[in-house]
Picture 1 (cartoon, rainbow, N blue to C red):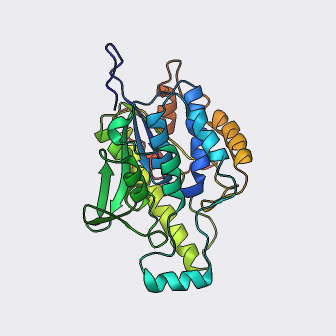
Picture 2 (cartoon, rainbow, N blue to C red):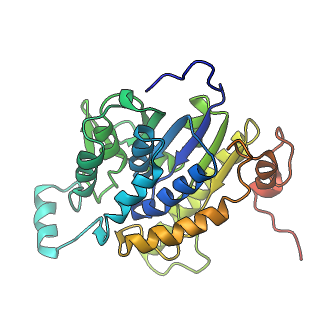
Length: 308
């Protein structure tokens, strides 16, 4: 990572990028909109697809527009293509995953190359899950491509990635939006883009529905609790884009997705930053329910809804 220039501000704005598969195109739009409004992170933490987007930004912090062009080039992308015969054959030969993660190695080869964490212009961390130890693991050194592959290894869908004799899978299992690592790395303020679908209001009717609803509840509750805790120490804004028009497994109209979500991102981020590109204090207070910086709003934390 490049060292700060003499006289550079000691503030350390952080950008935290959550996981969400093909929702990454939405995240890239919000990254671009934040850049337009003057937000310049000094450190980036990425999980799963957030590690892909984060790696690009850390290497090319002045060109988030180029990241959008990469996503536009992924039109008709499918994360998983399952053929029943090939699936049966694969499970016999390799019972640890349903398919091979082909797209991430291709993306890293084309756009990241052999870059290492030490080559980034912004301090960068990749969040994965150590399957061997049952714990979160944060990569901050070594080959970017290897860490990204580990962070995007969706359990059971893609094969775990072996690094130094241990197995790693998707970081979303342990920290889909890792505000804690950003704080530990010395962040002075945090902007996060959470791609976890919100819990639904309808009653699940299948095993998949139960699992999907349960994961959404767990992920949102964990992020909400972490946000409430860290908001007592610094300005924090977790942005949750509208995911309703998109799928995490495929990208059907990449150009349309970029245009639509860039428009939404510019609207959603209006007023979030002050004239210097930092998270506006009044915006942070609004997110905390109007509480003072050192007080957690219990109404916000428990989602108590006022009558009327």
